[in-house]
Every structure is written in C-alpha cells, then in structure tokens.
Image 1 (cartoon, rainbow, N blue to C red):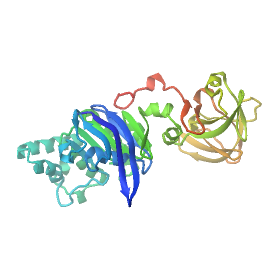
Image 2: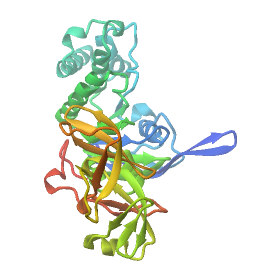
Image 3: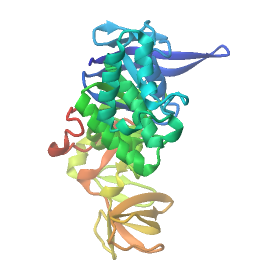
Image 4: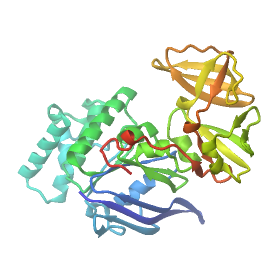
Amino acid sequence: MASVTIDRMRKVYDDDGGDIVAVSDLDIEIRDGEFLVLVGPSGCGKSTTLRCIAGLESVSEGTIAIGDDIVTDKNPRERNIAMVFQNYALYPHMTARENMSFGLKMSGEYTDSEIEDRVESAAELMGIEPLLEKRPGELSGGQQQRVALGRAIVRDPAVFLMDEPLSNLDAKLRTQMRTELQSLQSELGTTTVYVTHDQTEAMTMADRIAILNDGELQQIGSPLECYYAPANRFVAGFIGSPSMNFLDMSVDGETLRHDSFTLPVMPSLTDTIGGMQSVTLGIRPEDVILEKGATEEADAIEATVDVVEPMGDLSYVYLTVGTTEITATVEGERVFTAGETVVMRFPDDRLHLFETETGEAVRTRTVPEDRSVQGGGIAG
C-alpha cells in the first residue's frame, strides 16, 4: 500500500498546433489505504488524470509520486499499480484462471506454485472459484468484472486504479457490485483511485471525492462535506439528485427579490449578504417545504404543480413560479396533482448562497456531526 501525491500536474494535448488543456494544475494527496473517487462530467479530465497516474499518458508539467517514489517519468510496469478497465480487457481465448495469472507469468518474478496460490486466493476472495476454467464468452458481465478484479488483486499492487468499471453492468448488478467493491477495498486496505461520471457511485463508495470540471479541481472532501457544504455552484449542482434549485435574487435591504416573489432576509443571513447587490440562492429539492391552501405569511411562495413523478417512497414534484422551475421532493404518500396551486417555503437553515458572478459559495449548510464520517471512515 502507498499514498499517491499529485503535485501541480498539468496535461496538455497538441491539436494541430493549438493546445487543449485536459488537466490544469491539479493538486491531490491520496492517503495510504484511502478510496478516492474522481468524479465529474464527460471531458472534465478524470480519466486523463487516472491514465497519468498509471503511466499510460505523459505529464506535461508537475509530478506524481507513489509513496516516496517519484514515478512521473517511469513506465507503467515500474509503478506497482493494477488497473481495472471499463471493458474488462479479458483475453477471450484464455480461461479465467489464465487471464488472472497471465500478468504474473509475464513478469517472471513468481514460480508456478506462487502464481497458483495467488490465483486461488483471489478467486476465493471474489467468489469465482467455480468459474476459473471458463472463458470470458461463457461468463456474465458481473462474472467477467469479478475476473478482471481478481486479475488486479493477484498483483498485490500498491495502488488500484479503476476506470468506470461498473458502467457496462445493468442497474441492479451495478448496485450489488458497488457494495462488493467497497467491502473488497476495505478488506484489502489497498489505496484505490476510482473514476466515474456517476455521482451516486461517488457518494456511496468513496472515503473522499475529488470533483473535476474543465480540467480543474473544484472541491475535494468527504461525500457529505461536498453535499452539505459545496465550494461553489458547480459542485452544488453536480452532487445530489435531483439537482439543487438555483434562483437569482437581488438584495434590497432586508429583502431578497426574485422576478416572481420576495423573501424576507432572516437575521442569520444579514451579515452574509451585507453589501451585496445580488446573490444566487440554492436549495435542495428535499429541503423545499410544500403545503396546500393559501397563506399570508411573508415567507410563503405560491407555485403551480406541473408534473409529479411517483418514485414509491418519494415523489418528485416539479413546480413553476412565474417563469422559474422548482423541484421538490416529498414523501410518497403525499398527493399532489398537475395544475394545483400550492405554497412553498424555503427554511432559512437549509439555504445555500453563491456569488452571482463567480459562483463561489458564501453560505452553506453545516455537515451534521453524526454524519461527518461515512464509507471507509476517513473524513475529509
């Protein structure tokens, strides 16, 4: 096991004389034994970062260290890493046993009996002993993924690198494999860098998540830190489903004004927005309070129900206030119908505020103390 240190890494591609910056001045310290997830939209630089750690891409500037060893200019086989790919990359003419042992045989560092012991041990850990004599074409997607993971485990690497390894699985199996991967990483204690565009995977699996956009690191922290205390509007909108609601508001003394409604400024917000002319208000769908019937209270906002999506235990309610769309999440047994007029409230202690121009957070929620650590137990 080892830590991974990325120091001011920059990756630039030459596109017919023009530079394309894939990763810009990236600084990340991945702790020994940590499960770190790189997450972000397509093209944000997460897979490029993983490939640079693996040595499959050269680094334009900066350094990468695994433990105390600077590996920036070393080839992949000198880095003591094992990689699990999206497409499994199994040799179709080899059995599962042969696929798992191939890398060890090619290294020339192990005897046949040592290889056999490693393969059997990994197969037992992954629960695939009965599959060892089968070829990939005889295996399901989940079984192929387990073989690919077993092939990485037999290497006993300092670092696991995983590039969207669950994206080819169906939804139910993907959920199952998420749990299995968490348990496996916890049992092995191997430093793991995992790439995904799926924020649900990031939230449920990681000790910490690093959120990238346009090649730049937006925030790194525990999943709940990024959820409750996003560093900026991008993180707030990317983490969480349905996405956070955003409303552009002007500041008028002790009132926040929207095109279609006004909100009184609570005492707890007065100092935060003092001197500001405008602000972007953010509130998560589950924090929007919906009520039926009219009210004259100052913080009440009338809205029209457009669409209701029943999800079972929850329902997503899509509303319109003037020309602005708002999403609310309510308990599944509560009934709302399209065209109905309802009253919304935004609880003061659930509001997020962002600078209108930069998107930087000026006010977020506090992570509940009993939820500050999750997953593998490493807090940000």
